[in-house]
Length: 152
Image 1 (spheres, rainbow, N blue to C red):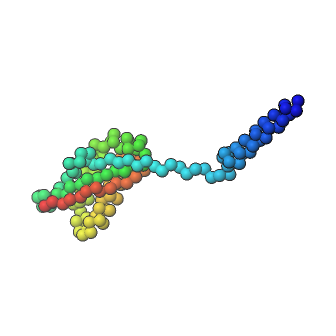
Image 2 (cartoon, one colour):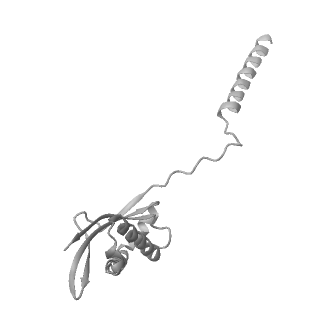
């Protein structure tokens, strides 16, 4: 009987110690703030898709081609499903980019901007509006001009 009592006390002490360890160290704090959401997984699409291609915009004045501008764009997405939606509508989006760039690059305002970074910022803002119109607001996180070259 003494042995059984000693074994019972030892088991209760070990069980109580295990419970106390769980309670103080392993249990989640009910007053703790929730964990921060995971950072978004960014993905991208390039226009045009192949690396050796470029989107060519011809600037026409007085019935003659005055200048060619070659573009490469990167569309940045914060979710894979948004990228899939944009890739399904890519031909229409490229067509919208062509229309917007032909109208934009022929304007005197754009041609008179000497600072290339200001011109690129203006183009990126306008193309972001095009993406929002075609795909819906918030689908494309950012439109970036990867490369812009002028040729006479």
